[in-house]
Length: 193
Image (cartoon, rainbow, N blue to C red; front, side, top):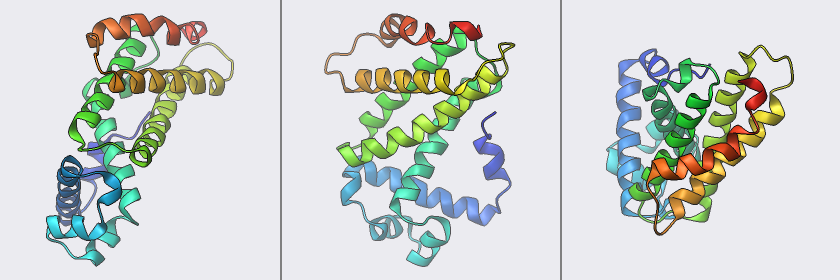
């Protein structure tokens, strides 16, 4: 099961949580104003009103901050839909595809200018979480075959479809898109249902 982001945060000292919250909200605000590549650690610390040493006590660099921010937001999206506490079913898979499409669309809407480097970093973080979740789901099935290849294929398919959807100029309704995309992912996982 994926670690619950709220539980992880609740175990932190309140001062650490507050400081991370300031850094994260400043970073998200900056992402809405300018592209990731042009954001510096100094920009984040100025906006958060913390010093650089404080920033580096929490994050190695702005890439670690981006990874943490995307990871926390995506895990919260998964948790909100209770997908982190269930097993593989076609309905759960459909809801997962919806969640990823919706999440990526919101990321692109909330960022000033998504750029290739930013997109690659987001992709890596989301695919990692998707793979963990799908592996967890599939490992709960009664089928005694390796889950690595089906989870990998489904991860890439879901992310690819969501990325395609989030970049479309004229997007169809999300439900309609997922209804069309769902069989392409589900066929790979039917043996686990």
